[in-house]
Each structure stands twice: as structure tokens, then as C-alpha cells.
Image (tube, rainbow, N blue to C red; front, top):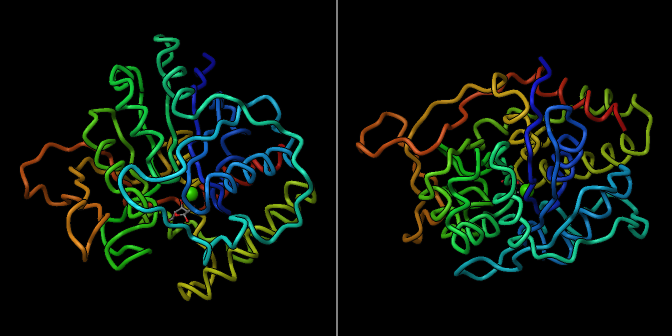
Length: 313
Ligand code: BDR
Ligand code: CA
């Protein structure tokens, strides 16, 4: 029997690791990538949308609509991650003018449209930036909650954050949006820092990518080398954590993760731990689980999946 391909929208803020998520999602035989939607996060909406078009141009991804979404969080001032991804959001490559065009629909409109279509094959959303677009779509058309198969989210942490001691960047950037999504009742896979900090682009991985010797391999190598420098400078990591494709991999092959159902609540009120994902690991709150939370990753299998995808370009 031929496995049914999942209908997927990738909601992202490229971003070096977002670029890798785009390449994995567009190449996977398990995925029908129906749209790439962009949201302000790593950089402004204008910059991350341009970046999505740049990556798709180099990769020859020409038939997937790219739609721009929300330019600021639901209730807070916008933050960007220039220290990690550079002023362009995708520093480290000399980009040519992209030839892939921008879809004229708003990302939220497109998310609603795609979720409401095809009940037989419900939509899966992979969200690897702040959750503003997804939350806004859920508020604008609440019926989509019953039409979305699953949302696979890169973000949060069971323990330490990376943007503040308590909070991971995507959740800190728009905690109210995260709260809306986790209260929606849609099945959620959460891929937190505990998982993505295992997906390190070591020199051995970079050598495997370079050996592919294609335009996409050269772009990926340059992006990951830039990412290596910032991860060493900012976090003291010996290799960068390639977070976002982990949330795509969780959809392609959930068996490469260890995950546990648990209740996840988002701190939207305190100063010290704003944006923290409060994960009820031991079930002490009595609150029902609302997410499958990743706790571990089969690292070699993840990179094999990523390398197989890169080899298709
Ligand atoms: C997340 O924040 C962004 O900088 C990355 O693209 C990733 O989605 C990691 O905390
Ligand atoms: Ca991202």
C-alpha cells in the first residue's frame, strides 16, 4: 500500500534553521507541501518573506505558494533575533534576486482556506516561528480546529530557555499566540530545545553536506557555517543546533523521537519567566495532557533524513 502523503503547511520565519526546514519539507516523499507561510520572528516580516523566496529560488521550489502573514505579535512589541541570524535574517550567503514570486493571499487567509479544504485529508501545520499566524487563524475561523490533523511546533523547553533563562525564542516572541494554540484542542507535537539541541551540525555533518556538491548543498553549507559562528559566540556551542527541521522530521517519521503526553501551559503573566512552557512532566497539576512533548532524538536517523532530502536537489 502506498502511504498517504500528508498535506502540510510550513509556517516559518527564515532564519538559518528555517531554511533547512523548508528544504526537508519540500523534498520529503511523505509530505505534500501546500504552502510556506511566513511570520515575523527571526527578522521582520519583510525580511523573512524575502528569505523564504531566496531559499526556494536556489532550491527550485517553484510551485509551492509563499504567503506573508503577521508582522507583529498579538499583544507585544516585536523582537527579532539579529544576533543569531544576522541583519538580513539569513546572513552568510550572497543572494541573487529571487525569482520565485509571492502569493498575494495573507498567510492567515491561506491557512484557513487550506484547513477548510479536503476533509478526507486534514491539514498538518508545522510551525517553526512565533505562533502568531496559527493563533490568528484559529481565532478568525474557530472551525479549523476540528479540521487540522496536528500542529508540530518547534519551540519551548522543558527546562532552560535560550532567549531568557526561562523562555525559548519562538514562545517568548509571542506568548499569547502560543497560549491560544495550546488551548485550541488541536493535537500538538512540541519539539522543544531538549530535542533540537541534539540536532547539531557538526563538522562531520557539514562534510556530508559539502560532499553533495550542488547549489543547495553550497547554500546549506554557507548558512550552517554562519550559524556555527553565532552559536559559538552567543551560546558557547561547539556546533549549531538546527532546530526547525526537527519539527518537520516529527511529522515525516515520529519514531525518531521519544515523546510523552503532558500538559503544557504558557506563562503570559510574569516578568521573570514570560513565555516559559510550563511542562507538567510528572502530572502533578491534574491538568489533561494537551501535547506530545519530545524528550529525545535519534540523532543519526535525523541527519540521514536531512541528508537524503538535500541529495534530491
Ligand atoms: C528557534 O528560534 C529561532 O531563532 C529559530 O529559527 C528556531 O525556530 C529556536 O529557539
Ligand atoms: Ca524559526
